[in-house]
Amino acid sequence: MSQEFDVVIIGGGPGGYVAAIKAAQLNLKTACIEERGSLGGTCLNVGCIPSKALLQSSHKYEEAQHLQEHGVEVSGVKLNLKQMMERKTKVVDTLTKGIEGLFTKNKVTYFKGHGSFLTPNKINVTGADGKSEEISAKNVIIATGSDVMPLPGIAIDEKQIVSSTGALDLTKVPAKLVVIGGGYIGLEMGSVWSRLGSEVTVIEYADSIVPAMDSDISKEFKKILEKQGLKFKLGTKVTSAKAGKSGVDLVLTPASGEGQEKLKADIVLVSVGRKPNTSGLGLDKIGLTTDERGRIPINDDFSTSVKNVYAIGDVVRGAMLAHKAEEEGIACVEIIAGQHGHVNYDAIPGVVYTYPEVAAVGKTEDELKKAGVEYNVGKYPFLANSRARTNGDTNGFVKILADKKTDQILGAHIIGANAGELIQEIVLGMEFKAASEDIARTSHAHPGLSEAVKEAALATFFKPINM
Ligand code: FAD
Image (cartoon, rainbow, N blue to C red; front, side, top):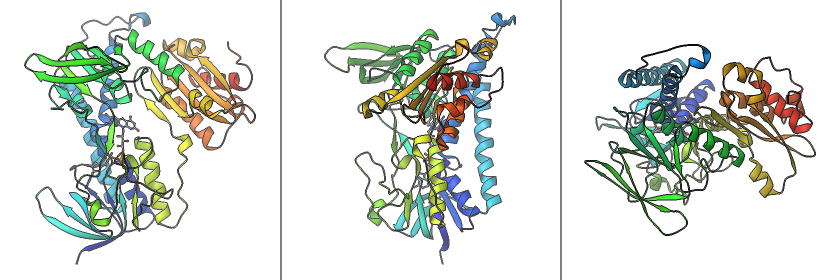
């Protein structure tokens, strides 16, 4: 007799593991299948967490060399890359094992293996030892996430031509690193290796870095990163990258036309995006097809075209972000349990964890213009914020966009130290349909970076005080 569950979740990433815990909390008999050997998915194992560990460590290394302004003389700062990598691994291990503990605590059955459909409610699980077992489920949630998007004609060997996974594990600082793709992963990993001593060149097909970002922010971001030493080739595509004994030879052409340029690198990072992962899932066995981008089509309640089969996270439409996957996991399980799960896609923040950080929520100014929405815009620079001055973190600004008639906040964009934390007040405000005046009339502790958010809100509906 196969084991029977109310909910079986395939994939133990942020979408899957959070859905599993929530389902168990709602008294549903729950199982989660994960083939990686550890829980937490891309995010904890090869994504958000190891990249942030390296960003933090490399930032400290960089900072330690530039403390003179604060009257702190430091000499003999040395990089111990092995120790830095070991720390990163320890952080990852602690967090992934923590999820196993949460599964035990919440009575989620954890199957270590590859899950594939036999029928819509029968799943085959094949363990690393090749042994298979069959389990049954009243409901199945597909949370199989995403994988590295390859670039046609460029073979990733994870040695000289690496994906983000390889870039998190280099054993030596490359003298020259070429990053293909100026999105958030490329810029974060480029920043890490630049701080550790690499000469970093970012090649981006579009005319701006992180093209979906508000263009004011994107321009400022590029300027700041250039000052830090990163080089950019925008409007450029890589047509070939060949690894050899003396490094990698790249050929570049302008996105818009003729001509060729050659470039040499020790390591090339391919970070042109991620693709939904449905490989070996047996979707054909249940008659489920993916869309033109390989995603599983879903309805608003996360149901697929097959009864009692749901999908969430990177494998479906929308931003490929851990917290978006988590929100979907919770809402999906609530709906399965007969409750009213809901995700507000207008209030999902996105953060680039470079230094300074860049954070955004809601619409960009370009999007509002295109949609013909009338808006007010308020901006406030960190240069005018007293805490930013005391900290020596004066780069960047806060920009808030609000509806011209109602003053409801439609979007916010921050570039500056701690932007990733500062944005959260606006995210909460947007959840409650706040006006910029609501933020402006909220008391903000002084001296704080969040006062720049308050001043930007003041500037949105009337005038800032401290400028
Ligand atoms: P995943 O995390 O991809 O998890 C899916 C899991 O399913 C995987 O563990 C996989 O092994 C398993 N699986 C797949 N198929 C099967 C099968 N058939 N049987 C069993 N198991 C299976 N997002 C952020 O929000 N913030 C960040 O700072 C951030 N940084 C990132 C940095 C990097 C370098 C990368 C690569 C990504 C980053 N992301 C970040 C994106 C984030 O990791 C993803 O959006 C998130 O992990 C998606 O969660 P998920 O649960 O949908 O899928």
